[in-house]
Length: 265
Image (cartoon, rainbow, N blue to C red):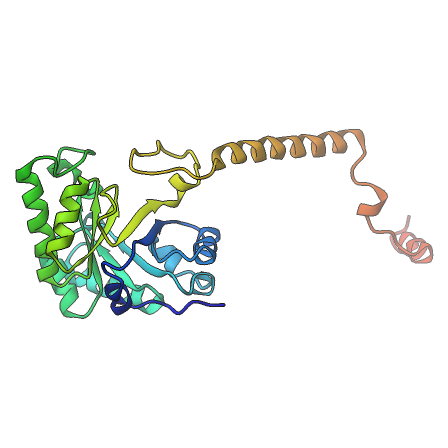
C-alpha cells in the first residue's frame, strides 16, 4: 500500500514524539528499498529527484535535494533552481549558504534545510573534518546558529558530529527540526548514508555510522563471477563451443538454394 507523501506540517507534528529515519542515497534501487523499509526522509542529488521514475519508486519518502553554496551562486539563482526541484518532486531544499540566502528562499515559501556542526563545504572554518561543539564557547555558537536558522525561516537543520548533550539542549530550547548525523538521539531524525549502512566500502565508515550489511564483499564476489563468466565466454568462442546450434538461425533449404543461385554461387 502506497504511503501518503508527508508534508512539512506532518514532520513538525512528529517533533518530540518519535525519532524519524533519514538516508542519503543515490540510486533508484536505493530509493525503492527506502520506500519498502518505510524510511521517513531522504537526501538525494538533483539528478535522482528529477528522474521520471523517482516518485513512482519512493512516493512516501520526504525528499530533500540541493547544492552547496559553492555550486549555486547568487540567492536568486538558487531560488530558480529550488523552484525547478520542487516542481520535479522535491519536498525541501538543502542550503549550506548564508542566512541571507536562507531567508530569501524562505520568504518565497521554499522549505529550507540548513546545516551546522561539521559542514563539509565550510570545514575550513571549523578546523577541517572534526567534531564541533566540544567546548562551551563553540557549543553556544552552535545554539546561536540554529536559532538564527529558525529565525530566518528554515524548517530544519542538519546537525552533524556534535556532542549529544549539546544537540539535546538545542532541541529542547528551539522549535526547528534537528536532523542528527552523529549528534545523538535527542533530535528529530537519525541520518546516515546508505553506503555506510550497506558496507559498500567506497570510503572509510565514520565513527558515528553503523554498518548493517557487507555489500563490499558481495560486490567483490559478483566481480569475480563477472570475470569468470567473461573468461568462459572467451574460451567458448576460441574453442568453437559458442555459438551452438540453439544460438543461430537457419534458412529453409529451398530458400537457401534460391539465395545461393541469386548471388551466383
